[in-house]
Image (cartoon, rainbow, N blue to C red; front, side):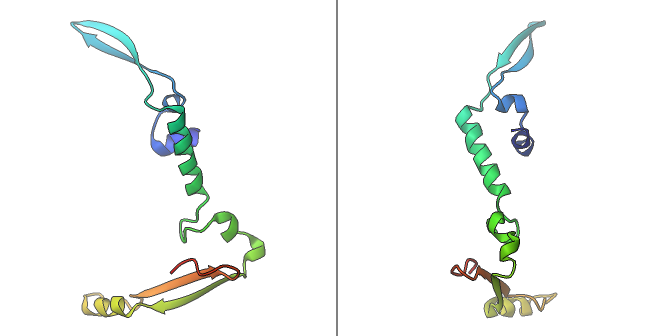
Length: 117
């Protein structure tokens, strides 16, 4: 849970539902109190699920890391590069034309349908 607190930039004690102590000066006197945590257990569970899902996803292709990094399937991935002629034409008309403009790479697992279109 500390990783989630760090990711969300929220104190760990807040995620754990602990109240936050506060001191407010009123009329020259310090008044001590507590503010209840806005994080309910269901909120924490939902946030943890999102972080876990993000951590299981490849940041490059969005694939499931358990599948995309499995050494047994290293050579089961196929890829092809195609060119979007519309993007290439638009890039050719702009300054700093990049010869890679419009290039798209599709990849798929040989047993699956194409996953990136």
